[in-house]
Image 1: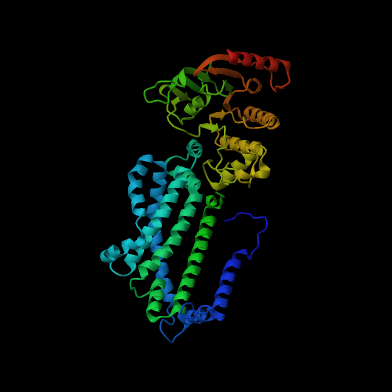
Image 2: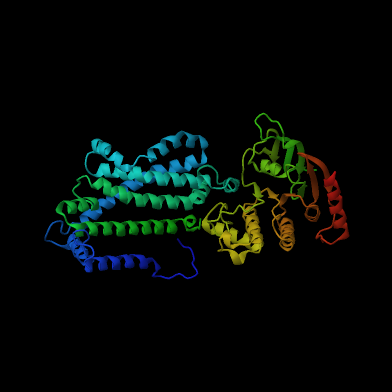
Length: 262
Length: 241
């Protein structure tokens, strides 16, 4: 992130995906892997086209509705996780009593895999938006909380003293010294949280919701359409990557402290 | 004589709740407006604790600190401190505009003025990690002066600089002190530095002011001047006692 490298080549990030694509193509074109285990790239691309803009066949043209539904769920769940995890993490990073009060519970809950919550969430919230948002928020909360806590804990006392001396104490100190000082960790926590949001989105959507990228993958499985499953996986990868870049772009544009090298 | 600007009376500071092993023991002194005071003492004698108590970072165990007649209870811009180590915020270019109150235009103007005063105009857009040690302390000085504090507290601010940068910073500080009629309380363990800078040196040891010495040398002072050398030696002898 913003780090200057001596020999920065623009194409470096593309080498690995291109190599994987080539290997995939070679494996399927050379008949080393049968198409019922892994469909060739061309077939996946064709399936993706139909999924995005086709008007014939199962799941044709569903992409935009699915993507919109999924983005809403990720957005709502992630926002909830940030709204709770960020302030709680910052406070528990600075106040030992708050940390002692929260840490046993939070670290205990953190050990429970998200999938274990699924049956309970289904009973509580039924199938659909609420269950998915709950799972996403729950999963994204922990990295946001833990990193905000580590960031707040690592802000040197000296910075807070300097801030207080210059009239930035209390709430002003929090917003002008503590949060900017903790920002490198906060950014890491937000990025991890957003990434895990996508993982739990798919989990929440596997339960039979009508729209969503996870639902699409599940429908494709019912239909035995491996090409659509692979297309769905690639779309989630691309959207996950795109939202991560947007998050970083937003943070570095809005906060000078997020541009800092940790 | 007029009322002193800073009055420290019977100040005691212990880091234990029951008050044992006090770092500062019943310490008293005053400073008048516009004076340059040095607190000279070996490391570990409580100099930094004294400064931090005056700054309001540490509550006194006993006794009081008053600035312009008002007791100090917490940190504030009337008592700005330049720290021993680098206390610049790494995410802000040069930091000087941080605490100046008022509108953005005024803040930038004042920041520019103070950057110019410390000779950092050319580095206004730099981030702290791009500055050398001397430049960082210049920026810290500008940041403190920009708040027009009643008292400038300095905790061995040039301790980590090389001899040449240190001499430059001392000269700069004296120039600004004369221009701004700024009251300065400067902590150091270096007798030559104290003799170069101060009107009055408070020699500290074991949590007390052991002795007070006026430095009546003419300004501008020259480090190679025999009189200054003699004063510095005198101070050094006092430290050994």
